Image (cartoon, rainbow, N blue to C red; front, side, top):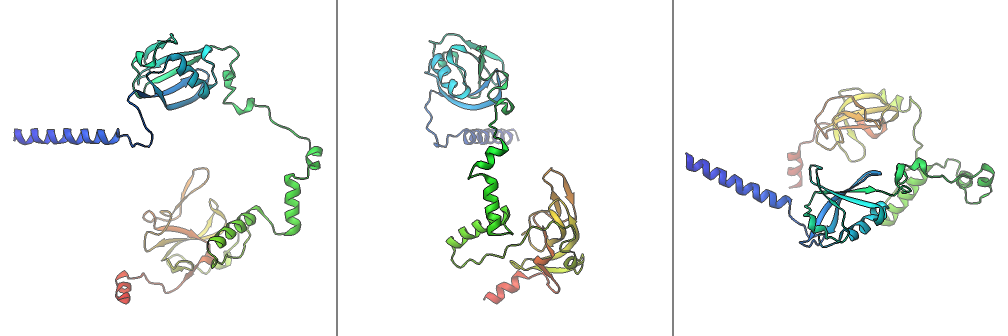
Length: 299
């Protein structure tokens, strides 16, 4: 009926207003006065865009210029400000430094564009953004080797102490020390060199076939073997792809490389897939667990 339709429209209108209030609600994380306005800032010499700079409508244009100087490096004498609306249309040119910002009726989301009139500005030609323009510190090989604290000397000293030393091993030892400090009962795993051979773990992998039931040695997660082979996107050597019985995995049977390329090795629901080294699981009679049987045992 017409009355029912009208009632629905009113309810929808109320809901939309409540949603608008929720989205625009001030969390109180930062105190905001009624005179505060949030303006984006762009610059004639800079590609970067600054979002929601908090300004007070009671500030004079001169004060605003001085505040923006700390963000852009353009001195107030050489800064020309233009106020743009949300569609980047010109609202006003802020030519009089004595006028208050509020005189131009800025709203949240408007943009202040700075035109840098300084012919010798540091920001001109990418001076504040292009790192290629920065003169880099250089040192000769001879002078570098004379320094007692150079990296090469430190690395060689580490190698003398431990011929098997590497950055990865150093990081693991530090992480193990931190965990040991937090938990005295923690027993770190022995260090293993990162495999670089394309045939590493081949013998173990050849004993595993697609369709085998399996259990992960650490944690006891169970599932079915869905892939056995190499995965260069992860690391050299042989890998085993597993579809777990429960959503305890990290993927859906696919891997995305550092270059953003995705390779699929098997199909499974999201968070049910995982890839492990062959020495991290056992294959055999590992049926899917029945959670109800476990609950009965607990009782």
